[in-house]
Image (cartoon, rainbow, N blue to C red; front, side):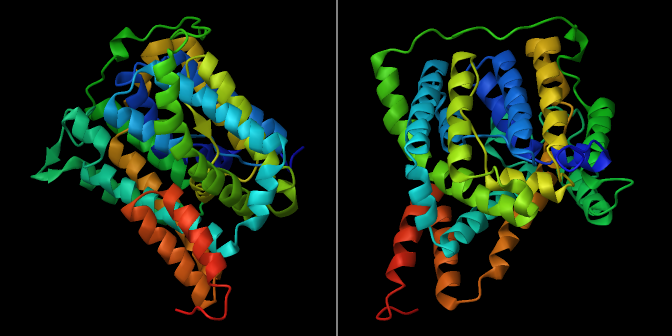
Length: 399
């Protein structure tokens, strides 16, 4: 039991490591797409807890980024997001139960896996930098680099940059310190900054109560919503989910935890996401997945057991059940620059997995996937990278 579940400062710090990915998209989908905050928070919490209990190691829970980013950017209605979750649940269940995901997983070369991890890590670092500079889509929509801080500049320097430099220094100084874990220090420190310098939006309305998720809060989508969700959201998301949330995630889990991750298989991850997306859809939540980037974030900041899952899962469940919509007031306390620093270091951890590639052709495939991902998206990079890796097995082709 102690090997599977530990509860200490490092596990708590590690459990917070992926907030930089989760919170901005969560806030955006509530404010822009009209998603139900209670359903979102409770389902995320339950998925964290259930994943930890089943897999027995640290397992990430993340929003499906293709669906989430497109939905926020275009303001899609909640009914279409609901439909995309049902589509993803069905598609993942199909490839999981039939064992097709095992065939796909075995067919993906190591160079492609490393390319997906490198690309995901680079995207995380880029987004983290944008958070610090105040240039992310969320901040641009909010009209300020730090939408929930009263103070925007100190001596003419944007406060986000100053917070980013300070938090980055703290992370590098305390990254491996078990007494004062870096993740815990920057999150608690960020919350203190929010209390002292924040707008305190919604804090005055905080009131404890019991807020239960509603069943099908958005009703049943129309035919047009189903078709849009399939072709615009679900099908573009599926290759990225297979590449990053299944194949790359399982590979990274084995690298981090060895034999302890024996339950983290392609099929188990796929069916896990299918069940989670069905539950999330009917309770008003957003499409969810696992992901190599989230695992790298949790691990980099100290998580080593499923105890981290139980802790962060309980936090999300309690926020949703006890505070309901007003839980956002607590989330607003964390400056965007703090989330950016966490993304920056988590991304670097994931990108560095590429260092075990030695062959020139393998490195070429990994960096081609990175380039294609930056120009298009990770799903395209994954598909083209796989084809390229197989083509380069021929002696007639060289680079």
